[in-house]
Amino acid sequence: MSFSNQNLVYVYYHGSGPKRLTGRLLLKNRKIFFEYDADFIKTGLELSPFKLPLKPGVIESSDRAFEGLFGVFNDSLPDGWGRLLLDRKLMNAGLNPGTFSPLDRLCFVGTLGMGALSYEPETPSALSHITNDLDEIDSEIQATLDENDAYVEDLLVLGGSSAGARPKVLLNIEGTDWLIKFRSQLDSKDISATEYAYHLMAIDAGLIAPKAKLFPSRKGLGFFGVKRFDRNGDSRIHMHTIAGLLHADHQEPSLDYESIMKATLYLTKDIRQCEIQFRNAVFNILSHNRDDHSKNFSFLMDETGNWTVSPTYDLTFSSGPAGEHSTMIMGEGKNPTKKHLLQLSGTVGIKQDKALEIIDQVLAATQKWDTFAGKVGVSAIQIKNIGDALRMVRKNSGI
Image 1 (cartoon, rainbow, N blue to C red):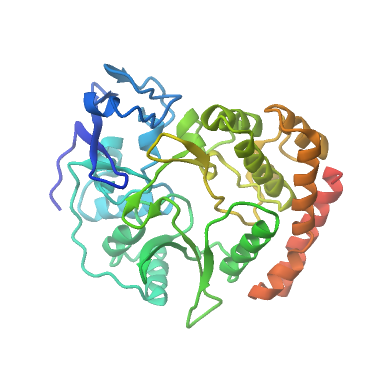
Image 2: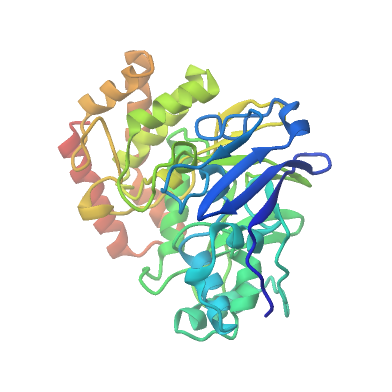
C-alpha cells in the first residue's frame, strides 16, 4: 500500500444537493488549523457553534482532547473497532499507526463517514469483495478478533468508519441503510437479543428511537441492527456528538447531564428537545445503562441550520466505570435519585409536573423488562440478573 502523509485536507458538506466545500484543515508544526471557505460562510450553517464558530479567518485548535483535532471532525473518526481495523491495515502494510495524524485518518474515512462531512484527498481502499451475508461477516469478525488479518480490508470498508467498541458494519439492505452490530469476544451470546429488548423497552418508555430489528442468523439469536438516522435516501444529515461539541473526551468521565441539558437548550432553543434529552437521562438511570459517555449523545442539524436531539442509540445494560455512570447526574454517579433528576430538569426550566410524568412513564416501561426480554429470546439467567439490577436501581433511587 502506497501512502503519503497529508498536511492539507479539504472538508465537504453533503446534504440533499451537490457537495459543498466547507473549508480546509492544515497540519503545521504539530498544530491543526481550519479555515471556512468564504462561500460556505454565506450559507449560515453553523456546523459546530461552540468550538468552531462560522467566521472568516484561520482558527487554531488549542484543545488537545482529540490530538488537536476540532471535535466536529473527530466525530468522523472511528474509535474502538474501526480504529483497530485501520491500525491492523497499516501494520500489515509495514506502516506505524503512531505516525499517522488525525488528518491522515480523515483521508481514510473519505466519503464513508457518519454524518454529512467528507474529506479529500481520499485514500483509496483495495476492496476485494462485499457480502450481505451476516453470518459470513460474523465469521470474518471473529477471525479478525483472533488476530487473523485476512479480512481486515473487507471489514474496514464495511464498518471501519463507525464508532464504538463492538464490531459493526454499515450495509444497504433492500434500499435501507443499516448499522448492524456483532458480538465481541467479551459479550454474552445473547447480547444482540438483550439490546433489542432494551430498544423495545425504550420505545415503550417514550424515547425517540430509530427503526431496529434482529437480523436472522443460521447459528444464533441473530444480529441487532438499527436504521441509520444520518441518512435519508441519497441525502446525508449532519450529526454531532456532545463529545465533539464540547470537546469532552468520551474515554473518561468528563460530563454531567446538566451540561448536556444546557447544551441542548442552547442548540435547539426548544424546551421540548430538553424534555426528550431528560427522558433519555431517566431511561439510562432506570435501565442501568451506565456506559452513558459523551459519544452516546448526538444532535442532528438539517439544511436550514435547525438542531434537534438525535434518536437514541447504544442502549443496553452496562455497569460503567467502577460501577458508576460515565456521565454524572447533578454530581452523583453511583446512586442517582429522583431528587437528582428533578434538580436536573429544573436546570433548563422543565416544569416539575412534566418531569414527574416522564419519570413515571419510564418507570412503567422498565418494570416490564422481563416481558420484553422474554419475547426476543434473552436467556433466563440474563433476564434474572438484569431484572435484579433494575430492581436495585429503583430501590436506591427512590423511584
